[in-house]
Image (tube, rainbow, N blue to C red; front, top):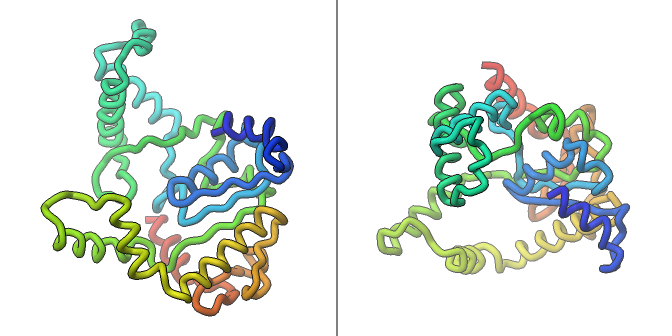
Length: 265
């Protein structure tokens, strides 16, 4: 990703862009990557602003790998391939599928050794993720002490994950016992039911215009939106996108108190 951003810096003018006004954005895992890049020293100066949609780098705790854990994963990967430190150069000849299988197994083994619960699960295990090595990634991005000078537009949906069981159960009742819908079928069904209404189109226009203006100017403004104040610890200003968008202050304080208390347990 850093190489891609470097390429953009070198070539963006050829597409009519400004290398001093690059905005990166992502949704879900893509949003987590934005947060990680914001706290990566080597990415400094390669972009100016970030947008994160329903993305996070932690789940009730700081979950990116430490150097200790990543070294153990590397040791277990070599062991699963029948290699050790003296034969590490043979990794260059290992088929990709075998390497991935060995690494996936090592993630599970290391998670069990270190008693690390896999995010969004109740079982031990690790995921493919960055490593907090103190250099390339100096700290857990959730702390974000190295990126407080970067303008960030960040938010989430009101009911993240809530509709998934209903959608999956509806799909299961209509199809043979296959474990998934194709992407095209999902998009078609959801658009027909939820995405074609006038109020949805209005919301789409307001949000996309705010996103574009934030990328262009640093101010997320749009026709129909009240003035969007920056979030600070004192103001707690948050824009609620609904049939009638509104700016509220400290609306999630009670929820954040519950989350903070849970993290301390």
